[in-house]
Image 1 (cartoon, rainbow, N blue to C red):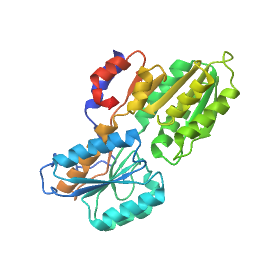
Image 2: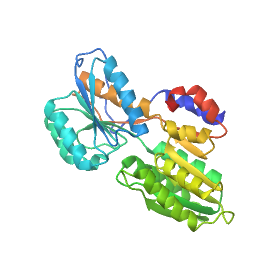
Image 3: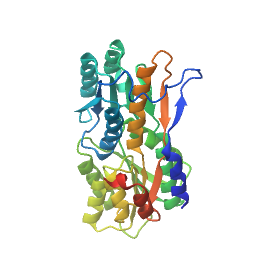
Image 4: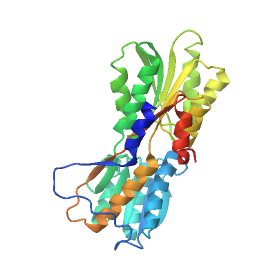
Length: 323
């Protein structure tokens, strides 16, 4: 299948150096001198499925290297994230992995980590002073937007649920905006979900939007910048008895993939967050092996569009994606 054929490209990360230099990451150092260290994880929302997958990937690499892993759940609060980074830096951990927060919101924490010479990697947050590695969000966002436009066609009404405090969502929305602006026949209603409470927020926005878009009177779709709000969207659609609305999301957590399998979601782009978490932890290990010539990295691993045409094959090939 064409989409799944592309999935072979996700087996390895394409590491893009931010500057031309002879400095390159060292070889895998999982049994090197950093053994016995601690990885401090700063989770955006500790119970979020996609966060948990990234943590799982990082933990596997860390534990193989003889590290322990501690996780702090900051519940989407940037002040708490900065405090957690500072606390980990003060403790002298071997490395810090931050999830979702944009690097621009972490100035105080990153300054503390730099002062303590503790490497920080950010999943999806971008590069900044003190950040040794991050992951790219653009490919997943672009794949989601392309799938949406192909499904919706030239005309229709869309509800887009956004979340600007999260850089992953910002990047996904940028790709969404770039795609839909090329299709002037698509009318977009934007609403910003609230975190915590994203499912309730999404359900409320969906219910209100449905009231203004009656069944049988248009080509309708709902897009969310990550798939956790989708549970609220599905709930509102079920309550209204609506089956005429297409649904699209990104990240592809286990519930998101299962929603596609159940026919509740039109398409989701599976983001290999477990692989990304593993790659970021490996970057921390590589930094320990040779920090002198280190060049900050942006790690890019392509996602996979999952819809009714390939969901069974996808689950067969990626059984861990629904765990």
